[in-house]
Amino acid sequence: MSFWHCKGRNRIAVPNVVDSSPHDFMTRCAVIAPRSIERANESRVLRSMQEYLDGEQSCNRSWILGVIGADIPLANRLLLTRFARYRQAQRFRDLQATPIRQTLQINCECGEHYAVEFQIFLGVSAGLHFFLCSQCQRRQTTSGEVVNASRWDELSGKWTRVAANSAR
Ligand SMILES: [Zn+2]
Image 1 (cartoon, helix red, strand yellow):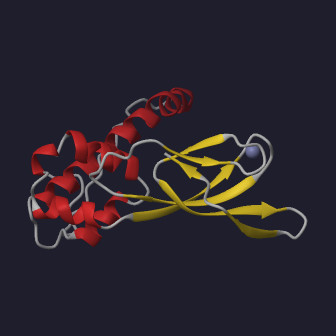
Image 2: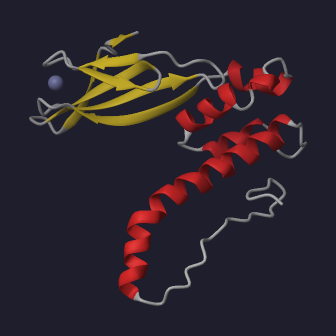
């Protein structure tokens, strides 16, 4: 049985809450939910990746990228640890071939705001990447190589392009 299937049979495990007390329920949610959501999400990505790497026809590259969504660091960790044996497979190589780009907002401690676009190759050890704040030179860790960066300019109320001061 699959938690998440590319043929439309999507199943997500929902914990069975038997306790009726709202207080207990809230406590359980606060304490248990983040862990179990994290685990459910990990098994969703794990199973989907298995289907993709097993060559299921409808589970193509764009499908798996859609499943992964923003969970790129998680997907990369799973690929490198749980699916290392697929390293030579065509589908593994397809993932490695094209970078995925993501934009994140970084708020530096000095008060500067940046929109930083970086690229990640799935199935490749990410290494350490940083973005350097152009005002205070603080290093901000990013999950991939920085390719574009913009700084929020309070005076003009606009994003202005800055150098993608990335360092490995
Ligand atoms: Zn700064």
